[in-house]
Length: 433
Image 1 (tube, rainbow, N blue to C red):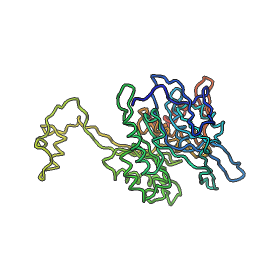
Image 2 (tube, rainbow, N blue to C red; image 1 turned 180 degrees about the vertical axis):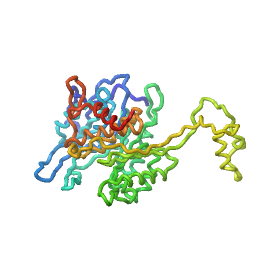
Image 3 (spheres, rainbow, N blue to C red; image 1 turned 90 degrees about the vertical axis):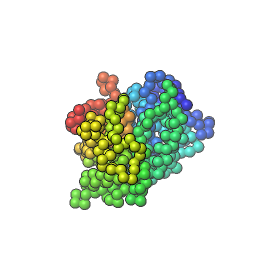
Image 4 (cartoon, rainbow, N blue to C red; image 1 turned 90 degrees about the horizontal axis):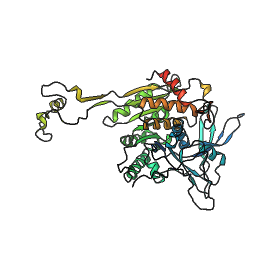
């Protein structure tokens, strides 16, 4: 099944369909002609869209009908790093109920993403109540029935994405990855080739980050590329609080220790851990190792130990492995070995002034949208995390989402700032090349 190039769904400020309320359970999308040379979809989230109502302690007034949910903020993170025409490479799904505010639909259309707006007048849009206490701890509950997304909701265009953001339990993550891979096997690129392996970024849900779920977590790690809990969720898997008892702050040592334990328990698996730690920034960890370089044709004979079939009961394993890395003269063939040193690094948060952080809600989801889309475009884990930190900085500067605009030269801005300019400043701070 080839991917049709003429039916990518997008919303733009110039073209948007109105719901057909006469049709039960109808799906409303805006279809525009796509460029045949389009790069396709770089990012898709299976996070939910939620309309938030937020109540603060008096005298701060409540706010209503705020764009929310993990799906919305992760799409925002990818969109922040995708000015048009790249904005069409950001895919997400919104299920609109009969109560969907027109103002939100207008706002979403200005992002010009490949969003699927699905109208169902027989239900209410998923809504949530958020409340904050004097310590800025957030309480949350659904006020209408929620509608989760599955692999069945993905169109062929979205299925062909280079990256997928999943926010779910370990068990459901395994199910989603398996289902997505199965469906992708039925697709092919326009030239008939199979789709390349996608990148799966998994965000565990807080309620199931417990020691009882640790085994399920480790069983999930071989199937994904990046696991990204926050500091509290990572500590939950380890039966810890993640807080330094002396300072009451997030414990960076606890984060590093937990990552080392996770990586140590999965020495033969290739995955990355990206821990989101609020004002401490994020911690990156990935196992290193070494492997043989790929050669076009063999240049050396196999060691004699390998010429007699498989392993025998009396095989000298030490000599065997030594032989694999030596040439006939007994010298180590270093030119045939690629060494991956792995990654162990802290990336600071962009905002160092607490007054710049107005509402942290959605900051972690925005971070992961930025991380995933940067990885899709070939960035290293460290550079992708830096881009993600910049994306998250825009999400936490206000209640809701940042304001999209243009500067005097017609270039895209968010909250009056160009994303590239903020990244260049952050890159200098990090001494990145």
